[in-house]
Amino acid sequence: MKPSLRDLSLTLQLPLAAAALSLAVALALVLLAATSSRYLLTTQQADYGNALAQQIARRISSAMETGDLLSVAASLQRFVESSPTTMVEIYDVEGQALGRAGEDGHPGRVHYEAPVRIGQDIAGRVRIALDTGSARESRQRFLLSLSALAVVLSLLVFVLARYGAARLVARIAGAAERLALEGAPAPVAAGSELELLEARVDALPLELLRPRDAGAPSGEHYRTNTVLYLHLASLAGYVDTLNERNLHRYTDRLHRIIYAAAACYGGTLQVARPFGLALCFAEGEGTGSAALRAVACAALVREVANTLEAGMSLSLAMGMAVGRSELGPGDAADIYPGLYLQGVLDELRDACLQDREHVLVTEDAAADADLAGRADLRPEKPGFRRLVGFADAQGKLLERQAALLLARLRGRREAAA
Image 1 (cartoon, one colour):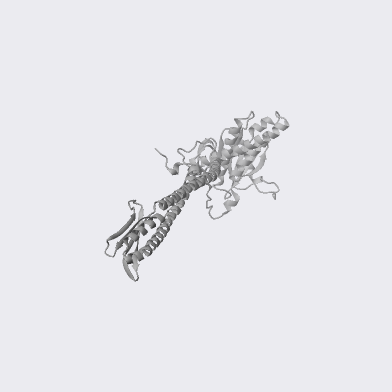
Image 2 (image 1 turned 135 degrees about the vertical axis):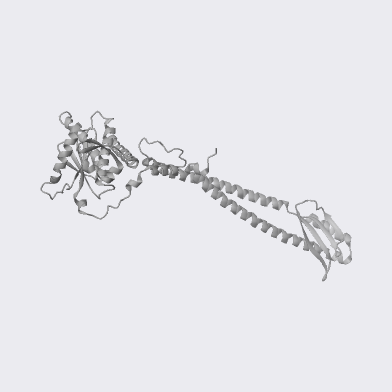
């Protein structure tokens, strides 16, 4: 089955369209030239033929006046031999032929007539034939040369458009490649590059990026915070075993993972305990509720850490738990910043020490409607639930964010190496 034009690559679609448009315009100009040249040729031939007919009519008028038909015949013969005329005939006023010179058997000849006057009276008519074959052939060669020029011009437009289309396709393909998740299969039956780009964009969970109406501000927006606690379990075992250089590289890797994930979901990072970090998420500072963003951030950290750990000799194991605090972490103006979070942090730290394999969520945080609608939480132990997975749209967003973070982290590692 032959593919249609829309299924072809843009490197062919655009040049073919440009060449077709150029050919159509050029052929329209050729048609205009054919019409104008035919009109001009017909007019010139008519003027020339009428002038020749009038010339021979004036020559034989004196012979017609004396009735010397022999002189008339000789004049006709000399006129045929000395002019482009192929045939000359003379008729009297009654239409009877009085003389003839030349032949009129060629189908491409055109006839012209002029009256023979004796004084003010018409004594007969002269009829001549002109061979227009050579003029017609010249006109056809002219039109063929114009048509060939139109084809050559279209080919030139095709080549130039192909070069420009190749550069455009390279940019579109690069954008589509950047939008693709790492390891994701190519869209089935993707035709042109625009269709591939549309398929990549359609695969993105863009509805999660649309801002939501947070409603009228209330006191809860300024007090309630969701806290993600991360217990760096593997770091505690490497402090006394790694040298300073390797330990610095290891902690720098952890910092980049956690800081990048926090930036994706609008979290505020601070050191909360020895080998423990806290990420605070406030309501109204990002898309989705604070509880959803905290749990998604934890899942993103776990996904990126597990992927990088597969290519390392060191472990990136860490425990993670999410809870809710009615008061925020405070700021630098406080005498003891983070004082109001200490109870929540102690509870989350104890949970991380007991379970390092799962992302744990307290019951009050799990009660968030946005989180409950997009995440699958299963009971784990009294007061906590564990994260099992996300809905399709949230899961796709998480996969894309993980792919972007991995690409950036691996790029920096290669640059540093």
